[in-house]
Length: 196
Image (tube, rainbow, N blue to C red; front, side, top):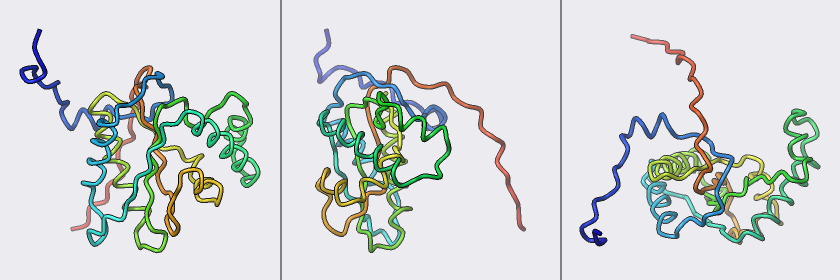
């Protein structure tokens, strides 16, 4: 048996394979994500480019199961009460009592930034993509939870995650060991216009 000092590092997938393999995962094992792994994913997120190199992001990690359950229910009620024109499929999903917006994932990473900063959405989205790719490269699944975004920016939602005043939640990303990675969906050919 090899000890930790002599054990070979696990193979790191080729970056092209990471880009092609990452998928939004909506089925998770109930295995906790080690704190060191989440810290590594956040470190990858902070390597993203940002406008004027402001690096405005702030990370809130939620692993408390009872809090995640409560947040899911509150966000569902909020979405149903505020978005009357949402597509029927989305409304049906939110009305299902058993539907959990965080899909049973053991961790939620909320990327936020000062609401007054320019390019907040773009900067946080770039950080989120880095986080998701880093997680996939280590065998973890992720999914950006759009159902949580609006509620997290209410007074109640901000209080639930202790979001500092003046901050806006942009990217709620769930993380966990997937039950399985979804099959790759064929990508459309890009529409490219060449000028010059």
